[in-house]
Amino acid sequence: MLNDQELLRYSRQILLQHVDIDGQLRLKESRVLIVGLGGLGSPVALYLAAAGVGELHLADFDSVDLTNLQRQIIHDTDSVGVSKVDSAIRRLGAINPEIRLIAHRAALDEDSLAAAVGAVDLVLDCSDNFSTREAVNAACVAARKPLVSGAAIRLEGQLSVFDPRRADSPCYHCLYGHGSEAELTCSEAGVLGPLVGLVGSLQALEAMKLLVGFGEPLVGRLLLIDALGTRFRELRVKRDPGCSVCGNAHA
Image (cartoon, rainbow, N blue to C red):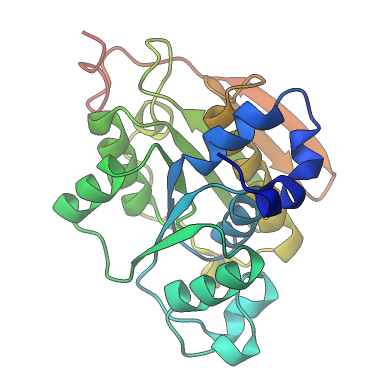
């Protein structure tokens, strides 16, 4: 049940008929894995902690660098040189002491990633490279766990939800295939802080919709964000029956 402090803390979202007491209890009972605590993972972790998601599993093997602070708002100047996981735990614990925080400070290999995904109800991919996204997607398909995936670079962002529990849902590999060996990272191409904040906030929103069970999640849809022109475009994405990752998942 929710105690008096929780009822007060979450009162504004409990007032929403789409959440109510039952939805807040679902959030409290939920376990979520956030892969990456950088520009996308920062708003994701902050909003899900503030919203009362009961258990956040935080995965990042990197340390805070001064160049991160322009966009990775969960960290501060005093955190430079500190593990991103430890920096995030300090901030999130101050925001909401009611939640549980589980640390994954080492890089996740195939086995540890499978275990981490299997221990939660939902995964948010906030990483910044294709190989990690592919590995997270494969683990989510194998464990049949929904995945909220976001990306941002330069002045462009993308967002989608892949839910292997649904027969009509594509997976990340259906959409992107084997990717590109020449893909750029933010450190090479640059990115604006408010853009990753926007994509990460939308990821947190999609996660809450899935956990509580309201609205229409971005399953089978890819949201494209053009920050330069402040335009949003949506593409329909179908599951590939011949996908090497999820093709046999619904057989």
